[in-house]
Amino acid sequence: MRSSLSALFAMPVMLAFVGCAIPGGNSGYGTAPGDVQGFGAARQTSWVLPGAAKQDLLYVADYAVNTVYVLNFPQGALVGELSGFDGPWAVCTDPGGNVWISNFVKQTLVKYEHGGSEPVKTLKDSRAYPVACSVDATTDRLAVANRYTNSTHPGNVVIFNLAKDTATTYTSSNLYYYDAVGYDSSGNLFADGAAENGSFGFAELPAGATKFKPVSLDVQPTIPVGIQWLGTSLALGAAGVNRKHDSTVLQVEVSNGHGTVSHTTSLAGYNVSAFFVEGSILVASEDPYVEFFNYPAGGKATVTLTGFESPIGVAVSVAP
Image 1 (cartoon, rainbow, N blue to C red):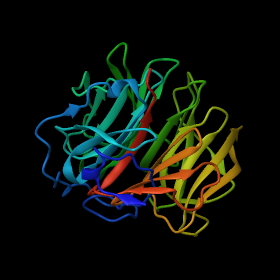
Image 2: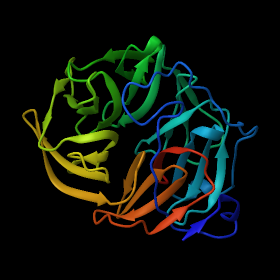
Image 3: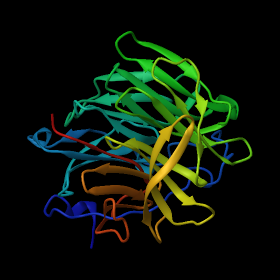
Image 4: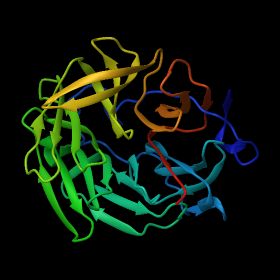
């Protein structure tokens, strides 16, 4: 079932998914960001329907039109649009329902309250290109994965202390391109991406530590597409695993520098660029669609939303 965004005012829909190349390049590693431009027409005015903040909301960052769409969840009806971006890429949320958007071309992180139409905070991600973020609820910190820095130098992870307005930069010996970050409930931070030769890399910054530690994994993902803590385990998204090209979400248990896959959710036939799990629903973007899947079963999408141009980041903000 596919419904255009223009029809979402009138009818709630369910969802399904699609994958997306790096804007301005290809889906492989090593694409330079130098010629990346915000190529869509930005919306002039942000708006969110009155009462939307009382509902759970799905945020979809559409890179091509410089807009973040706000839909009620799980109904899927359009209830708002956020404007003023130049390359919105990733979306992450915190337990209070606040939403952070990574603005790739402008090199900023922008915060909105749940259901809000105007930003309440903007952070400058100096000389870097943010593609993922995660909030540590235990310390009020925001971690940002920068795939590149200026002049296509190796990427990094920047952790912003939101209470003190300070930022600290970290790198890992087994990562050159940084694609995803995610905190667990104890404040441990995980990052993945690729080494300079394109091989998968996975690392952990334990709570209170000052250096990332490489983590081995008993499978070989290709093109990471997200990290999320699910309460008892990490979920790692990948556009393929062990040279197979179907998108997959892996539940991983990490201990003593090694990650063991405890469950595999296969999205056979799909090419996902981002995912978010909320309860029994997995939301995923697959250019130019956004889709819902049963989780952890996977399989075929239950519903597909159309009408997007190039959706990348997706996340659910639970009503406080």
